[in-house]
Amino acid sequence: MGGVMKFVKLYIPDEYKDLSKDKLKLLTNGCGPAGWKYDLVPDKIYGLCIKRACDIHDICYFYGKTNEDKATADRIFFNNILRIIDQGHNWWLLKFLRRRRAKKYFYAVKWFGGPAFWNNKNDDKNTIEIYG
Picture 1 (cartoon, rainbow, N blue to C red):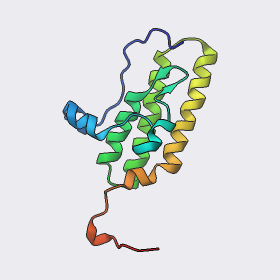
Picture 2: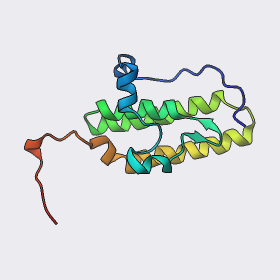
Picture 3: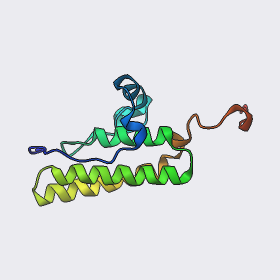
């Protein structure tokens, strides 16, 4: 179903280039949030693996510091998925369906990725604990 994959050039941030395999494995988890929710978001779109695009997105989120960094990370994610799709199967209908699903992935991170992006970015002096 996925066809023969060709080499795909994906955009990666400078931080990604310098990571060891162990650090990369520690900071990335493929598509979806870490934890039990991880398995809810597939690493494949209609049989085409997009895990590398998701891992790059994880790194962008880890090193990002501002809302602009998050928006850039989300656009890089979408662009990388489209690059993978364009190098996948040539059948137009499958490409169309994959691109449509890629747009859903993009809007999911754009609209709901805030907690994942901001996780562990606030230092203790800027937080309070509340009990409810």
